[in-house]
Amino acid sequence: MKSNRLNYNLFKLGKNYMANEKRNNELVYSFKCPSCQEGTINIFKSIYDLPDGDKMLILKFECNACNFHKNDVIPLTTNIEPGIMTLHILDDNDLKSKIYRSPVGKLEIPELELIVEPGPRADFYYTNVQGILFRFENAVSIYSKNLEEDDPEKSEIDELMFNLKQAIEGKFKFTLKITDPEGGSYIIPQDESKYTFEKIKKKELE
Ligand SMILES: [Zn+2]
Image 1 (cartoon, rainbow, N blue to C red):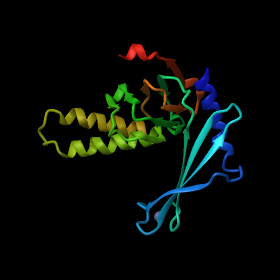
Image 2 (tube, protein in one colour):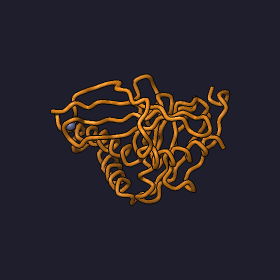
Image 3 (spheres, protein in one colour):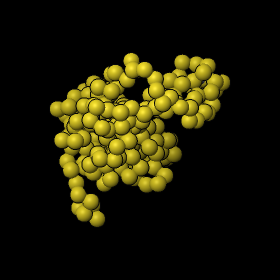
Image 4 (cartoon, rainbow, N blue to C red):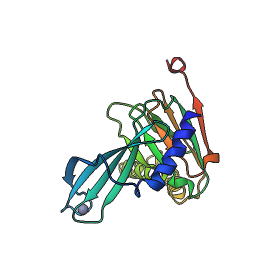
């Protein structure tokens, strides 16, 4: 399957691209570092051609003052098929699986009743599973603080918070599902056997 091959290439790429010589390295954007508040983060982009013709965009974030650095790998080829990606997270290793949710992708964790709906203002996510849980934890914590102590919803939210914390530590089994009608999202699993991809036709979504 195409998407699996792509995922495999991403694995290889992730392991090898640091060793490859730099090319097309282009400064695209700079902003103040949120980590040290002093330095400037420069974003460099480079394009990599994979042996099978796919192209990858690599964005490198580097602060010139502190140690902050980060690499994002984004597939540029549009031939990733629309589909439903499902990843079963059973242990803390699975939490390291990489996730990229495009603006049209819907992300769900059914066991925790958490959903990120697609939309023009929806954040692009390129993070790992744990990163997504942290964002949810942050959002739920803000929500919880605004509840009165005697709010009937309080116990429900407390339970959700408990499960979220367990999930972040790899002690709560759950499913992460991305439904993407246009095929821009992807999951790069740590363990391929816990990942499934189900093709969808555009018609079925209408
Ligand atoms: Zn910095």
